[in-house]
Image 1 (tube, rainbow, N blue to C red):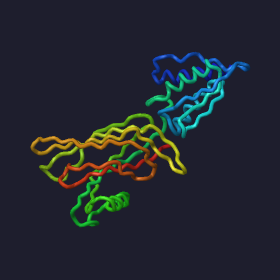
Image 2 (image 1 turned 180 degrees about the vertical axis):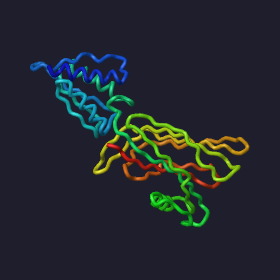
Image 3 (image 1 turned 90 degrees about the vertical axis):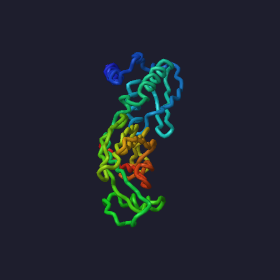
Image 4 (image 1 turned 135 degrees about the vertical axis):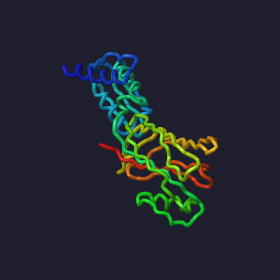
Length: 256
Protein backbone atom coordinates (compact mmCIF):
# COMPACT_ATOMS: atom_id res chain seq x y z
CA UNK A 1 0.00 0.00 0.00
CA UNK A 2 3.03 2.29 0.36
CA UNK A 3 3.92 2.53 -3.32
CA UNK A 4 0.75 4.29 -4.61
CA UNK A 5 1.12 7.04 -1.98
CA UNK A 6 4.72 7.70 -2.96
CA UNK A 7 3.78 7.61 -6.63
CA UNK A 8 1.10 10.24 -6.10
CA UNK A 9 3.67 12.49 -4.41
CA UNK A 10 6.12 12.20 -7.28
CA UNK A 11 3.49 12.90 -9.91
CA UNK A 12 2.18 15.86 -7.94
CA UNK A 13 5.65 17.36 -7.93
CA UNK A 14 5.87 16.91 -11.66
CA UNK A 15 2.51 18.65 -12.07
CA UNK A 16 3.83 21.62 -10.10
CA UNK A 17 6.68 21.82 -12.58
CA UNK A 18 4.13 22.23 -15.39
CA UNK A 19 5.18 19.08 -17.19
CA UNK A 20 3.19 18.88 -20.40
CA UNK A 21 3.38 15.11 -20.82
CA UNK A 22 2.11 13.00 -17.97
CA UNK A 23 4.65 10.48 -16.74
CA UNK A 24 3.69 6.86 -17.35
CA UNK A 25 2.40 4.86 -14.44
CA UNK A 26 5.09 3.27 -12.32
CA UNK A 27 5.56 -0.46 -12.61
CA UNK A 28 7.61 -1.94 -9.79
CA UNK A 29 10.49 -4.22 -10.56
CA UNK A 30 9.23 -7.79 -10.37
CA UNK A 31 11.57 -10.45 -8.96
CA UNK A 32 12.61 -12.81 -11.70
CA UNK A 33 12.31 -10.28 -14.53
CA UNK A 34 15.47 -9.64 -16.50
CA UNK A 35 17.11 -6.35 -15.56
CA UNK A 36 19.20 -4.04 -17.68
CA UNK A 37 21.77 -1.41 -16.73
CA UNK A 38 21.07 2.06 -18.11
CA UNK A 39 23.37 5.07 -17.72
CA UNK A 40 21.52 8.40 -17.79
CA UNK A 41 23.46 11.71 -17.92
CA UNK A 42 22.32 14.57 -15.69
CA UNK A 43 23.27 17.86 -17.33
CA UNK A 44 21.79 20.61 -15.15
CA UNK A 45 21.44 19.41 -11.57
CA UNK A 46 24.45 19.40 -9.25
CA UNK A 47 25.06 19.41 -5.51
CA UNK A 48 21.90 19.47 -3.39
CA UNK A 49 19.73 19.63 -6.52
CA UNK A 50 21.23 16.35 -7.72
CA UNK A 51 20.49 14.77 -4.35
CA UNK A 52 16.87 15.95 -4.47
CA UNK A 53 16.53 14.23 -7.84
CA UNK A 54 17.87 10.98 -6.37
CA UNK A 55 15.39 11.26 -3.49
CA UNK A 56 12.47 11.65 -5.91
CA UNK A 57 13.51 8.46 -7.72
CA UNK A 58 13.01 6.42 -4.54
CA UNK A 59 9.36 6.02 -5.57
CA UNK A 60 10.52 3.36 -8.02
CA UNK A 61 11.18 -0.11 -6.68
CA UNK A 62 14.46 -0.32 -8.54
CA UNK A 63 18.19 -0.29 -7.95
CA UNK A 64 19.98 2.90 -8.95
CA UNK A 65 23.05 4.88 -7.99
CA UNK A 66 23.97 8.47 -8.74
CA UNK A 67 27.35 10.17 -8.98
CA UNK A 68 27.11 13.98 -8.80
CA UNK A 69 30.75 14.47 -9.82
CA UNK A 70 30.28 12.47 -13.02
CA UNK A 71 26.78 13.82 -13.56
CA UNK A 72 25.28 10.38 -14.14
CA UNK A 73 22.66 8.04 -12.70
CA UNK A 74 23.00 4.30 -13.29
CA UNK A 75 19.75 2.32 -13.18
CA UNK A 76 19.51 -1.47 -12.89
CA UNK A 77 15.90 -2.45 -13.52
CA UNK A 78 13.52 -4.04 -16.03
CA UNK A 79 13.33 -2.20 -19.32
CA UNK A 80 9.91 -0.59 -18.76
CA UNK A 81 10.87 0.68 -15.30
CA UNK A 82 14.15 2.10 -16.62
CA UNK A 83 12.20 3.96 -19.32
CA UNK A 84 9.84 5.44 -16.69
CA UNK A 85 12.76 6.55 -14.52
CA UNK A 86 14.48 8.15 -17.50
CA UNK A 87 11.28 10.06 -18.25
CA UNK A 88 11.25 11.51 -14.71
CA UNK A 89 14.95 12.40 -14.87
CA UNK A 90 14.56 14.14 -18.23
CA UNK A 91 11.61 16.19 -16.95
CA UNK A 92 13.38 17.28 -13.75
CA UNK A 93 16.87 17.82 -15.16
CA UNK A 94 16.19 21.33 -16.44
CA UNK A 95 16.27 24.87 -15.07
CA UNK A 96 13.26 25.79 -12.94
CA UNK A 97 12.17 22.24 -12.14
CA UNK A 98 11.06 21.26 -8.63
CA UNK A 99 14.36 19.42 -8.15
CA UNK A 100 16.29 22.55 -9.03
CA UNK A 101 14.56 24.91 -6.58
CA UNK A 102 16.28 25.04 -3.27
CA UNK A 103 18.36 27.33 -1.09
CA UNK A 104 17.85 31.02 -0.72
CA UNK A 105 21.03 33.03 -1.27
CA UNK A 106 21.91 36.42 0.15
CA UNK A 107 24.28 38.26 -2.15
CA UNK A 108 26.02 41.62 -2.06
CA UNK A 109 27.12 43.22 -5.31
CA UNK A 110 29.68 46.00 -4.90
CA UNK A 111 30.80 48.35 -7.68
CA UNK A 112 34.35 49.67 -7.30
CA UNK A 113 35.73 52.63 -9.26
CA UNK A 114 39.46 52.41 -9.91
CA UNK A 115 41.58 55.25 -11.29
CA UNK A 116 45.24 54.83 -12.35
CA UNK A 117 46.07 58.35 -11.13
CA UNK A 118 45.95 59.90 -7.69
CA UNK A 119 47.55 59.22 -4.33
CA UNK A 120 47.27 55.51 -3.54
CA UNK A 121 45.77 54.79 -0.17
CA UNK A 122 44.46 58.31 0.35
CA UNK A 123 40.83 57.24 0.04
CA UNK A 124 38.63 55.93 2.84
CA UNK A 125 37.44 52.39 2.07
CA UNK A 126 35.14 50.09 4.06
CA UNK A 127 37.13 47.39 5.83
CA UNK A 128 35.37 44.57 3.99
CA UNK A 129 36.61 45.73 0.56
CA UNK A 130 40.17 46.73 1.47
CA UNK A 131 41.52 43.24 0.74
CA UNK A 132 39.86 43.29 -2.70
CA UNK A 133 41.46 46.64 -3.52
CA UNK A 134 44.88 45.39 -2.40
CA UNK A 135 44.54 42.42 -4.75
CA UNK A 136 43.46 44.67 -7.62
CA UNK A 137 46.42 46.99 -7.08
CA UNK A 138 48.76 44.02 -7.35
CA UNK A 139 47.55 43.29 -10.90
CA UNK A 140 45.94 46.41 -12.44
CA UNK A 141 46.45 50.21 -12.32
CA UNK A 142 44.27 51.25 -9.39
CA UNK A 143 46.00 54.09 -7.56
CA UNK A 144 42.71 55.41 -6.22
CA UNK A 145 39.69 53.25 -5.43
CA UNK A 146 36.20 54.20 -4.41
CA UNK A 147 33.04 52.24 -3.64
CA UNK A 148 30.47 53.53 -6.13
CA UNK A 149 27.52 51.58 -4.72
CA UNK A 150 26.62 48.38 -2.88
CA UNK A 151 23.53 46.37 -3.80
CA UNK A 152 22.02 43.68 -1.54
CA UNK A 153 20.13 40.94 -3.41
CA UNK A 154 18.11 37.85 -2.47
CA UNK A 155 18.30 34.98 -4.96
CA UNK A 156 16.92 31.46 -5.05
CA UNK A 157 18.72 28.41 -6.32
CA UNK A 158 17.29 27.45 -9.69
CA UNK A 159 15.58 30.78 -10.41
CA UNK A 160 16.73 33.82 -12.33
CA UNK A 161 16.95 37.10 -10.43
CA UNK A 162 16.99 40.53 -12.02
CA UNK A 163 16.83 44.21 -11.17
CA UNK A 164 17.65 47.72 -12.34
CA UNK A 165 19.64 50.22 -10.30
CA UNK A 166 20.38 53.91 -10.75
CA UNK A 167 23.97 54.46 -9.63
CA UNK A 168 24.79 57.62 -7.64
CA UNK A 169 25.82 60.66 -9.66
CA UNK A 170 29.30 61.87 -8.83
CA UNK A 171 28.52 65.54 -9.50
CA UNK A 172 25.71 67.67 -10.96
CA UNK A 173 25.49 67.98 -14.74
CA UNK A 174 27.54 64.85 -15.41
CA UNK A 175 26.50 61.61 -17.04
CA UNK A 176 23.90 59.39 -15.39
CA UNK A 177 24.58 55.68 -15.12
CA UNK A 178 22.26 52.77 -14.36
CA UNK A 179 22.93 49.04 -14.31
CA UNK A 180 20.63 46.18 -15.32
CA UNK A 181 21.35 42.99 -13.34
CA UNK A 182 20.43 39.45 -14.40
CA UNK A 183 21.71 36.41 -12.54
CA UNK A 184 20.87 32.72 -12.40
CA UNK A 185 22.25 30.60 -9.54
CA UNK A 186 21.71 27.04 -10.77
CA UNK A 187 23.01 25.00 -7.85
CA UNK A 188 24.55 24.98 -4.37
CA UNK A 189 27.20 22.34 -3.80
CA UNK A 190 30.17 21.45 -1.60
CA UNK A 191 33.78 21.18 -2.66
CA UNK A 192 36.25 20.08 0.01
CA UNK A 193 35.17 21.99 3.14
CA UNK A 194 33.52 24.94 1.39
CA UNK A 195 30.17 25.63 -0.22
CA UNK A 196 29.87 27.11 -3.70
CA UNK A 197 27.08 28.54 -5.81
CA UNK A 198 27.19 27.70 -9.51
CA UNK A 199 25.96 30.61 -11.61
CA UNK A 200 24.79 29.80 -15.13
CA UNK A 201 24.81 33.51 -15.92
CA UNK A 202 25.92 36.82 -14.43
CA UNK A 203 24.96 39.67 -16.76
CA UNK A 204 25.57 43.32 -15.83
CA UNK A 205 24.72 46.00 -18.38
CA UNK A 206 25.76 49.57 -17.56
CA UNK A 207 23.66 52.22 -19.30
CA UNK A 208 25.34 55.64 -19.41
CA UNK A 209 23.58 58.84 -20.53
CA UNK A 210 25.61 61.98 -21.25
CA UNK A 211 24.19 65.46 -20.46
CA UNK A 212 23.80 65.96 -24.24
CA UNK A 213 21.64 62.81 -24.43
CA UNK A 214 24.26 60.49 -25.93
CA UNK A 215 23.81 56.93 -24.67
CA UNK A 216 26.46 54.22 -24.23
CA UNK A 217 26.12 50.63 -23.00
CA UNK A 218 28.88 48.51 -21.41
CA UNK A 219 28.38 44.89 -20.39
CA UNK A 220 29.86 42.19 -18.18
CA UNK A 221 28.79 38.63 -19.02
CA UNK A 222 30.20 35.68 -17.15
CA UNK A 223 29.38 32.45 -15.33
CA UNK A 224 31.11 30.20 -12.83
CA UNK A 225 31.36 28.80 -9.31
CA UNK A 226 31.61 31.37 -6.51
CA UNK A 227 32.64 30.37 -3.00
CA UNK A 228 30.48 31.29 -0.04
CA UNK A 229 32.10 33.87 2.23
CA UNK A 230 34.69 34.96 -0.33
CA UNK A 231 34.61 38.17 -2.36
CA UNK A 232 34.98 37.52 -6.07
CA UNK A 233 35.70 40.08 -8.80
CA UNK A 234 33.43 39.10 -11.69
CA UNK A 235 34.20 41.70 -14.32
CA UNK A 236 35.70 44.97 -15.46
CA UNK A 237 34.14 47.81 -17.46
CA UNK A 238 36.20 50.65 -18.95
CA UNK A 239 35.08 53.84 -20.61
CA UNK A 240 32.26 54.92 -18.32
CA UNK A 241 34.14 57.84 -16.80
CA UNK A 242 37.34 58.82 -18.55
CA UNK A 243 40.28 56.72 -17.43
CA UNK A 244 38.36 54.97 -14.64
CA UNK A 245 37.58 51.26 -14.62
CA UNK A 246 34.61 49.74 -12.83
CA UNK A 247 35.00 46.38 -11.10
CA UNK A 248 32.02 44.34 -9.91
CA UNK A 249 32.52 42.29 -6.74
CA UNK A 250 30.24 39.47 -5.51
CA UNK A 251 29.96 38.18 -1.94
CA UNK A 252 27.32 35.61 -1.03
CA UNK A 253 25.88 33.53 1.78
CA UNK A 254 23.72 30.43 1.44
CA UNK A 255 20.74 30.29 3.79
CA UNK A 256 19.95 26.83 5.16
